[in-house]
Image (cartoon, rainbow, N blue to C red):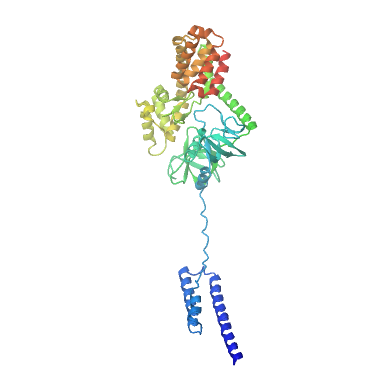
Length: 495
């Protein structure tokens, strides 16, 4: 009997273990099977029903309440396999926006430097590892109060925060510098006056042609491209690739080549400018000063832009970058030279149903009496294109040349009559200062005359030009343009 009792007890225990293992295995097998094809709530309900069935069978078994309670307390787990969401395919504009969101741009602004130096350490005296031209792009790695640690191309280093823009200003800077282009892809496309297929065609964008992008439509389906200096219009983004053409950091060797190229282009532009019917004034000194300031301004007759620096409030135009009310005055003179022709030029520059209305409004604004600098008058891209067309017309060229001659003649008169300057080099240097900022030019020349004791002694001293140059470099406003000051000094020594 003893042996039989032990056998019965062993059998009951074995049954409990085996039955419990089977139930546990069943639970585990359920939890391991994928149920992604079921509703998760339904899957949980089925598992609960399955567990209750097992527990009910336990309730009918000869196990103790304590043993059953242990099993009932075990949680039921359901593994639901979630499908990974499909990645949304980015549009061309979204890809472009993603690119520029990681970028910062060099903005030399009022600086006279041709490039921003990249230093090995956050110190102006540390080794220069590369150069960033105006409009060049970079990635900011980290920053402190005055410096960014950046990477551009293959070059790493530190740059002054003063000459770097980021965030929302990046796209504006890139488009102003014409560093975002539309590349026409599969076939030539019409360039339209508006973002509508029914709008008038102002030109053609040719297959594989590359044109600067001036703006994107609000619905991001069209790009405003510059077809020529005086013609712009809209093309569908579906017909273009958006290309960022902004330069990256240069090595010392690349920077030297860049400077040589700039010097060559500048010389070509200057020769073209001097040969563009301005001719000789009959006054050798006046001709030499015209050549000097033409070099320093590096002017484009058709130039027209909105403010670039914090000190500017309105438009700058023309070969010698007339600003504010001087710019307004130049445009008034161009219109007055031939009113009918000017109206025709403006009308042809605008397109669409409201084109004529916009041309009329701009004409009235040009001939009106509002002070653009005080009102902070800004111009739309179509308005700037119309102004460029005015500036580049025959009457625009003639008015600018005439204004150049009269402006230089007036400044020479101030140098000779007011300050009694009798030396050609001093007169030319003063005229260049006066062209940029009359108030500071007067302060600089007065300081020089006081230093030497009189205008006569100043003009006769062999170190007069050197002292004038030194004083100009110390000036808080004009001294910022050190490259211009140095060129002017070198030029005036030869007069």
